[in-house]
Image (cartoon, rainbow, N blue to C red; front, top):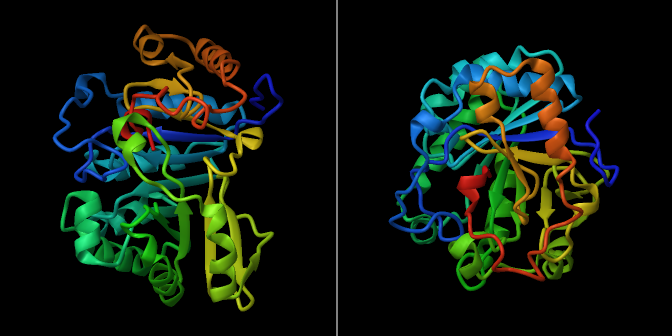
Length: 324
């Protein structure tokens, strides 16, 4: 098993397959940004498979594909099939903005993808366009419908509540998710890069009491994935709400994940700069033993906690550069 110097087991790798995205969400990528990583520096499918296989041998069994927008990576179902076949990979999931989901959901499921997280911040067309920079609501809703019909049993909707923008939409989002069998997860905005630092995110811990009362929710002991979300459910199980609170109630003491960017840089924490570049090792022909040793070295760099509250200006890279 991979353990860091603070005794935490690292069993979750978030893997970015591209830093490019077809949206410009106000809390993520700056409008007009074009300084994306060159494709020549992206890890190829064989390189990605090799890194994931090394993580799996070291006991990391949860893999999530991210971006940018991962569905923009050409031939992604091929990569999913390569990863799904690896010994030790027990949980293979993907985070997406949903704009490309309608045309790809069936192929993703057939390739071996197990779970989906879809970003959606409102059911109001104008609000989605304002936050994402694109009139994409109907594309996302269609993608969700196709994904459900394709047989994905677990679909989570990720919503970032922003003060005065979409905070009044939470009840409607809960009702929509209840009606369609989805799980709503609210995520606090993090001050990553200029865009994240300008986002007026909400303290979700202050919303919980009123939401629980209105929707009859009580704490759930059910584990719904390997991430940091805490869940509440209605008595009949028809409504599930998850909260991810990196700002108001950080979960650093139980952090079990690291992130691999599209260029092969392994980041230990969203809120710190500790990292290790794996691409030079891979392209220099390192052995499996050398690759595993490098991963163990990187895990030793993992900090005890982020410092978003103490030093909100510290991290200038934005989310898609790191891997969501």
